[in-house]
Length: 123
Image (cartoon, rainbow, N blue to C red; front, side):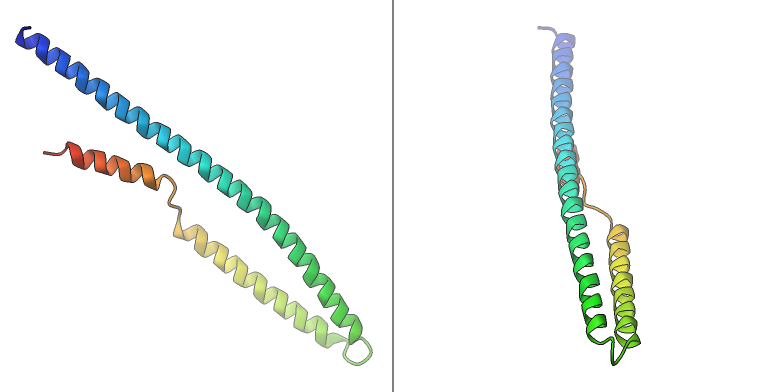
């Protein structure tokens, strides 16, 4: 085998290896994206269910206490529950904002693998 042919076959082998590595990394990205979609979907369903039930429970509790105190203190329970619900709602909104601003670790495994690949190719 002559030198240009060996160089050509080495180059083809290198290209095949790089393409195979790229394919594996893209498959990993795809799997991570699917897992994240499933996780977020489940989180949204359970979160909506919990918020609905907790909201109904709090409303009924507020009505129960208001009705129980109706003869002696009409406005006190209404004011207390209004302040409580607004404060908890504000706290929840603040926590949601903080989580949005903190970002996501989506594709972190793929990024780490690509970083290791890059470091492995350096001399």
